[in-house]
Amino acid sequence: MKKMRLTIKHIFLISIAIIFAFPFVWMVFGVFKTNNEIWQEPYKLLPSHWDIAKVVESLGQINFNGYMLNSFYVGIFGTLSILIVALLFTYVVVFLKNKNTNFLFVLVLATYMLPSAVTYVPSYVILAKMDLLNKLNGMIFSCLASVFAVFYLRQSFLKMSYDFVEAARIDGANDFKIIYHVIFPMNKSAFYTVGVLTFVQLYNSYMWPSIMINDDKKFLVSQGLRQFFIQDGAYGMNWSEVMLASTLTLLPVILIFIIGQKWFVTGIVQDSGIKG
Image (cartoon, rainbow, N blue to C red):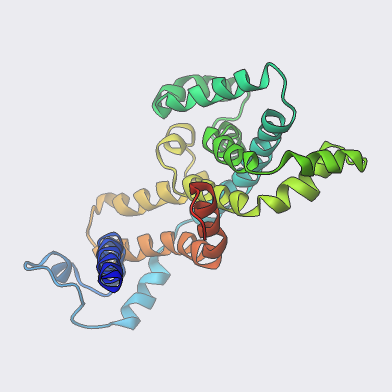
């Protein structure tokens, strides 16, 4: 009976995995298809010919004009900045408690209920007054406050014993040494999980960058992909190149997840209360 339940569980999980993976598989196989093959009915998953030479030729025609570098810049430095800000704020809320810290956390958490679109206008006005519009640093600055990062790190910090922090203070460590030598090593998985999710969010963000960045040399890859999609009014003229550009855009994110999936899964499992 136990074996049957395990088999059913595996079949269910594999089915869900196939459903989620299908769009990506379709996109990758679409790189090798012609327009007629992509849109023909009934639809075919596999291409008729694996024309590698055509894909190599298409690679030379795709020019993102540094869009991926812009996205990496915003993703890497934005993630590091958000982690530092969230770490310092969460450390104060959890380990330097006084009568105001819980109120501060509740106040910050309440802002998570606001739709992101509501913040666009005030954020735009603030960035304009600081002369940070149409700049990648402005994009990073506007995303520094991450309520999700604070909430996730707080849940991880609360599982620590306060005795570790007290012991470090008795040994003469100041708050920054405690953060570096105690807090960070004991919550490494949580930091990695927040880091990956934040990087993916910044790397793929589209709506807010489209509002504040109008210089095509500073476009993120999501904006660049749209430009490639509609360039010269050729909407969908060559779908295999669109598929190839989309695949190239996704590859860095998939590689990051594959490289660090052990820490990522560990962080999710620990913070969900599931024993490994």
